[in-house]
Every structure is written in C-alpha cells, then in structure tokens.
Length: 461
Ligand SMILES: Cc1cc2nc3c(=O)[nH]c(=O)nc-3n(C[C@H](O)[C@H](O)[C@H](O)COP(=O)(O)OP(=O)(O)OC[C@H]3O[C@@H](n4cnc5c(N)ncnc54)[C@H](O)[C@@H]3O)c2cc1C
Image (tube, rainbow, N blue to C red):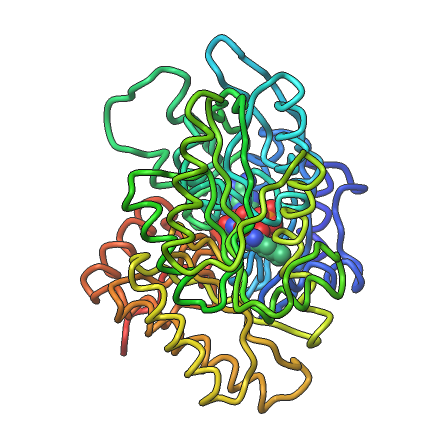
C-alpha cells in the first residue's frame, strides 16, 4: 500500500481531520524524551476502541509497523518509530468512563493525563497512587506501557499494582478484555504481561484502575545531609526500622542548585544532599513515627530536619523535586536520564562508582531519585550538538547500568528498555531468557508490527 492510499484508508476510519501527515506533523512525532529520532509515515488520532481496532486490522493486512503514543515523555525511545509506519496518538481518547466508589475503581481511556485523573479523584477523597514526576503531562496509557513508578510507589507499588483490568486491541484488530473488578482471575496473568510491555504486544484502549482512600494525615520532611553516604544510610535504616514512608526521595547538590535557579524552593546550597521523607496514613501514631524518623536522621549525622508546616510548604518541596529534571536544562542544553535499580543498602557504594565513571568520561552528573526503592536517576549533562560528547554520554550511560547490574540490581526501575537499553538487557538476561521473550512476542504479535525494534534485542549473530 503506498503512503497516499494509507492516509486515505486511515481517513475513512477516523475522518481526514484526524490524520496528520504534513512534514511538520511528522517532524513533531519523530522524537520523545530520549536521544533517538525517527519519523513515522503517518499519525492517526482515533476516537474509539472500534476505530483503533480498524486501524490495527489495516496495519496487519498491509504489514505496516504501528505504535501507540501518549504524551511521548518516555525516556528510552519507546515512541520513536524506528521502522516508520503508523503512530496512534491517544489524545482524543481521554475520558473518565466510570467512577465506581463502592468497588474503589475508576475506568479510563488511555489518553487521560495522569494528574488530571488524580485531581478528579482527589475531589472525591480518593487517590490513584502511581505518580511519575511527569504526571502533569504523561498519560495513563503511557504509564501502562512503561509500568511507570513515582515517588509514592515506595509504599503503594508501581502502575502494575494499580491496573486491575484492561481492554486491549491485538495485532489483527481483535479486542480482548483481561482482569476486571473481581479480586482474582483464573488463568494466565495476561494483564501482567501487557503492563510494562512498551506497546509491543497490543494497544490498551480502556483501563480499570484501583482507587485508595486519600490519607487522613501527611507529614513531609526535608532532611539535610553533609555527605551522600549519610543520606543513603538513613534511607536503609528507616526501612530496616520497619517504617515504610510514602516517599524517600534524594537530591544531590548539583540538582539542588539547578532547582534553586528556576523554582526557588529554599534548598540548602551548601549541603551534599537532601532527602524528602513523607509519611502518610492515619493521624494516630503519626507523630511517634515522625519522631523515630528524625531520631534515625540524627543517628546518621543529619544537619537539620525541616518539617513542612502546611500544604503550601509541602507543595513547594514537591515542586522542587518534580521540577528537578526540567531545571537541569538551566545548566546544560541536554541530559540523559539513566534509570537503574540497586538493593538500597548498596546506594552509597554505587553512587560513588557512578560519580567516578562521570569523571572518567569528563561529564557532570546530577542525582535526583527514588532512594527508598534503590532506583537511581543519574542525570548526565551534556550538549547534544557535540558528537564527541554524545558518544561519551552513551558509553557512560551504559557503564552506569553495568555498575547497577553488577551490584545485584537491574537496568530499569521504571523507564523501560525501549531502544536505548537494548544491548544492556544482556547485563541481566541470558540468551535463553531473551529467546523466551522473543517467543512470547512472536505468539502475540506474529507479524511483528507492534512497536518493532523495542524492548527485546535481536539474537546475537
Ligand atoms: C521530566 C520527566 C520526569 C519523569 N519522571 C518519571 C517518574 O517519576 N517515573 C516514571 O516511571 N517515569 C518518569 N518519566 C518517564 C515517562 O514520563 C513515563 O515513562 C510515562 O509513563 C510515559 O507516559 P507518556 O504518556 O508520555 O507515554 P509515551 O512516552 O507516549 O509512551 C510510553 C510507552 O507506552 C506505549 N503506549 C502508549 N500508549 C499506549 C497504550 N494505550 N497501550 C499500550 N502501550 C502504549 C508507547 O508505545 C511507549 O512504548 C519521566 C519523564 C520526564 C520527561
């Protein structure tokens, strides 16, 4: 099928106004938050499951690559159409379909913005917990595709723990439903397979999500440390003490400086790092828990612990954390956000090795990350226009993931594999492991049209 016929065929399904094919449109869909670039042949904006099913059937009939896109904020090249083809942008499918408070669920379309959903639920006293720092922009469909995490996932779990059902369009347009509102479902964990599959197995057109009651009490603290080691040891000790805070987020000096240049939160510019520690739950016992956390901080040489006195102060502390990646843009034109996870007790040792590696490649690194989960996000700063720097950044990014894997960790905490970490999958998977994944992919997407070239590397020659 030539491109003109494809555009016309898609127009018949969704209306010509919902098909984008100009040079400018294709350029706009050629990138996401990673370093890679490639243009699709056409972009389509469906308005219903039926339309997605027809688009998929057309792609299968004509063997055209197809990929789903939320807001394109993923950091690993998940929405880069490396083999051209059709990008299905879910921006029109952004409705809340049902709020079922007695069953504590909400059913949504994939294009809804994560924070919009969360704000809507909060008005009713409920929380949809997974809160990627990109929540102002990211979509639930994209969170589903990447199994997104976020600061509050330490206590509440990542997206996979909160999606209890989904409607999925398969490679040939077949629509299946998996999971649901009942507590247990027999058979294979089909839903679990699709969450985090980076759009390589099917496109989710509806999701049933779990709601939890908004906590009655919240305490947010900023603990300031003179060394990264003291901050990291505090993280392990808090959890060893049996306390699971809602969040335990760390930010180092470089990142604090960048934040202060943009958001002005009042972070201490002469400290090595800060921890944002948030406790939530019932008011009873909350003060006692906070006292214990402060005591642990003191045992680890904390300089000071500041307690947010009201919602405005808490929001300011969070604005700094959630705006940290963007603030890095003040220091250098580009950054690569690495995403590796290590057992949390290994944090001090691994962070030291990461900074050493940065020196070796002569590239500055800032750290802002989900310390409670042992999920590191070294932000390597550079100038994308300089090919030599770009080369060094890629090598350093890979070396950092190797450091994490060698420490008993893994190559992604929440950002997935995408295009960027295909080679690095071999740090954690054997050829047999990867071959098994290829068999799953082949069984569910026999023509290999769904987001090809992502997540699973080709066999070694
Ligand atoms: C500043 C910044 C901060 C970030 N912070 C976090 C964080 O704290 N935690 C975190 O986990 N991530 C974070 N991210 C990464 C990113 O925001 C997440 O991966 C997010 O889930 C992507 O959502 P999206 O709507 O942009 O999806 P996209 O980037 O558009 O898509 C992501 C993947 O999902 C697939 N997909 C999209 N829609 C569907 C669908 N309907 N069905 C099946 N597959 C689909 C795509 O094909 C792609 O593979 C951050 C990114 C940035 C830029």
